[in-house]
Image (cartoon, rainbow, N blue to C red; front, side, top):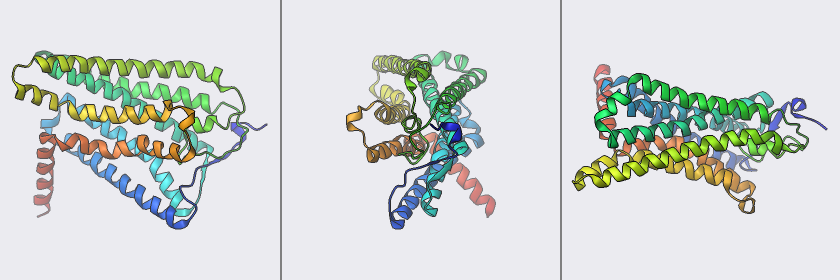
Length: 311
């Protein structure tokens, strides 16, 4: 019986059998990755350079873009390289790092989305106390708590997963190292070892979910009490990007990890993994900037300043 310490590498899933389809996958992922780099990079640059956007909402949005950039950079470049050079191997150390950083960033993003729901709640329900309750120190502490929660969750899960004995080969049915796929290779009863970690994960997920729901219940009640229909629409429009991103994040993650085994298959697992790990980081910047005039104006100002400096 071999264990995880004797395995030096894992074999990731190849997207296709032919070189042509492998190259198609490479170019598709390259386009998505460049879109994510461009969108999130522009948001980070615009918020950092424009002092008018140095507010709690945009501070949290900057953190979200950093997390999205990290999340997609953990999985996509390695998969692109494998397709380009027609290889499947990933070392055990690389696999552990991929598991750790992906869990770290995805958990921190969920916690940060919860903080952003609180930001929208204070902005609409307690506008007179908004500046007092969300000062710079409070914003930094809440962002640090989100990052810290992700770090703790990732450490516990990664350490537990790679301490399990593995005796069912080293082939993973996924294009990146994913904990459920690694657990399929275990030859021991993982439930007892996973129990404490699962309890912590479920507790964290439920606390965040309940907090987001309660925040939006209060937001809806406050919006409905606004006498002017135009005022209510304007107030709620500031929440639409966040609500859309949260819905996309939760729907893809819940379907990925809570769907019944009866509708699970290797091809469906790959599609779902792309939906929750690759698509959101690429589309989130466009969701936030589509209806945000402040971001658009700041971006135009930045482009104009760069263009005229070059002239």
